[in-house]
Length: 127
Image (tube, rainbow, N blue to C red; front, side):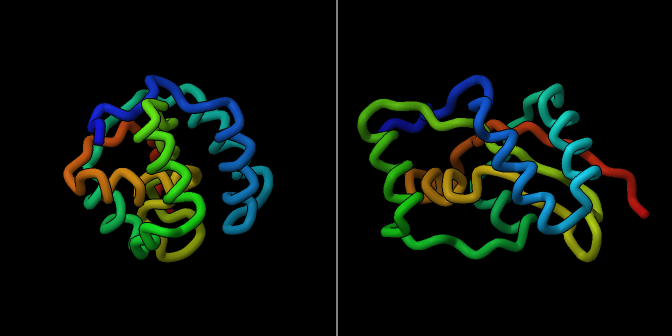
């Protein structure tokens, strides 16, 4: 399977998805401010295994509907959208939040745990 399977920029629909998720863990106003910052944040790359460890998220199963769909996309030659991340204590005990792209991280991990994943990362000040 191809290892260079990433687009240069996030899909436009990733930002509203990030806002919906973030509004579950912080205020709607803060979520909107974070999404504005994500739209202009520089791109950085991190390994799939490190993103899972830092976010403390469990690995989704290979046959998870969204992971399987992303793996099929890569097999067919499509490129995945970069991940949207928030670093900092966004409310309580969350050092790294995957605002959008959790299933894409897991799919990339199955391809190669050392995959370099492009991400837009916003850093929030500590409270």
